Image (cartoon, rainbow, N blue to C red; front, side, top):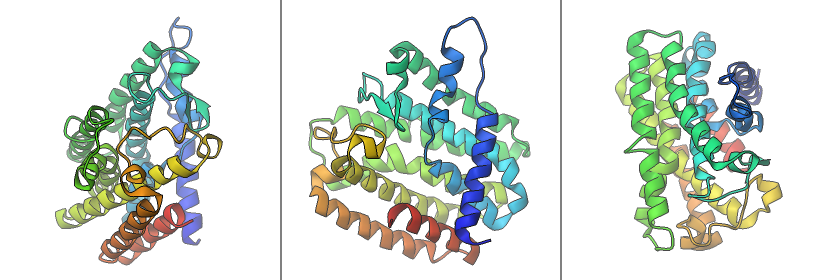
Length: 290
């Protein structure tokens, strides 16, 4: 089985697990239970779960199925952040993953509560995962640290507060390290925790993840500036007032930054063991060079 087939199998198996384990809250509420599932059923790249699962597959493939619980927890945190990011109080977006956003399909209250529910449900998934308590505490710590007050939420706070105010390139990187990169970085590190890698390797994977996260954001900014909404599956050309790589550096400058980050990530990945190195380099080729 080649690397592309391994990656596709990981994603297919994870997607099947995800669809069987969506949150459920039946009641006499007319739409809450349906809304809990809607953004997952709309699709998505599942990039963060793939990062975690590739680490596990590289070192202990027998733990991949158990790791689905953790990968889904990360995807739930990511999806909650998108639901909240699309709310009228933030970006007021009407499209996500080619599907109407939840506040459009239902209302702002439902969308807010679904985001809240997915955030907390992610930690229930980790608590129920078939790993030792010590491992689960480490995983909960990493996900909380990187998605909470000093992680993704801090990035969102900076993004919103400094809208219409031009940031420096170092401030922009700080913003996106927190808003985007930390969740990707902790996906890699959580995979390393599951398979028992030493702290030095965990930290190296985390640093690689930060740069992959910045690369992911630069590419997203380029897509926003150059794609139609139909092609991107979400509103585009709507970041003119925001601090983005394309606004700060121009499209050509953002493309140069993307190329620089690819080289830096490839150099870091070259320090890894051969199996995980091959998988991560294949992902860089697939997601950022196509």
